[in-house]
Amino acid sequence: MTGKRMMGLLIVALFAVAGQSVKALELGQDCVNPVGEPGKCVLFRECQPLITIYNKPINTPDDTQFLTESRCGVYERKTLVCCAGVKDTGKTSLPEPPNCGIQLSDRVIGGQPTKIDEFPWTALIEYQKPDGRFGFHCGGSIINERYIVTAAHCINSIPRGWKVHRVRLGEWDLNSSNDCEDDFCSSAPINLDIEKIIVHTGYDTRDKSHHNDIALIRFTRAIHYSETVRPICLPLSASIRNRKHSGLSSYAAGWGKTETASASTKKLKVELNVVDLKDCAPVYQRSGISLDSTQMCAGGARLKDTCSGDSGGPLMRQFTGSWYLIGVVSFGPQKCGTAGVPGVYTNTAEYVDWIRDNVY
Image (cartoon, rainbow, N blue to C red; front, side, top):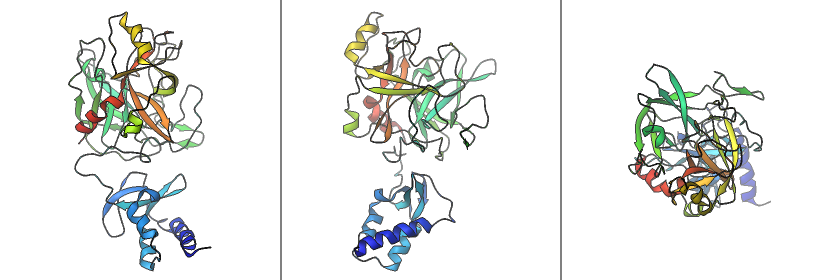
């Protein structure tokens, strides 16, 4: 066994012991390293400064102590470390894998109801109505500590007298104040006040084709991630952004209307095949609706669709272990789940630059 291999085992052992008395942080949270420098809590393999120390031919006792004291938590049995230099630079950053698109328990997708910690980036938008009542009527997706992305029509095409009130994160069962499943109980949902809403300037409420149907909502404070509150990945890299999804399986999740025509109290999911735009556009052209490359279609199978109340929510695919937001629920057939009429989604890849330009 080589000296470096021995050292590796020693460091793994020390990592396992070090920091047990310190409150563990979540993947992606802000932290301060042993010498007081700000950073982010990331996987050890993602922290080049610590890897450089670890790969030195000989590690001094100070090196070993620095490595072990840099530990900030555990993610899927892998060590998390406080990595200096991985911090925000004035603007709010958009996370990239492995700091997004991760469910803490990797459950098998199947059946309609979600598990309590499935799709932890789903958000609910709450509205205040003229009669003083409140209700959740749109969804969204967490993209970092300060923002969700949703549909523009959830902001600008709401009934007269309605006001966007706040955003709820970490919800699962709207009928329960304390969500529990399989011996796991989640923290109470978070209700967040809104600092700013940014609607795409190209969205026109009179445009029945719903082009540029995308918006951002910024919270008044940063959130802390948990098992049920985490960000989804955006298609930031060129390789993900340029992927073709046609014919492939995707998932949508939300609390929208079900086949019984009433809104669901529990978060639901539906598996939908992505439909090529050239096959989908003619279906809508008959109604005078013109789809373009900033939109995408999914579904079209009978009784499998997103519906009102799901608007603004995510259409998702998983690549190399991380979930990506490929679409935002926009509109669909008047009768949800109509065979041969796919739902229409805002194509997130076409708006990544707009999102980058509008988060701060």
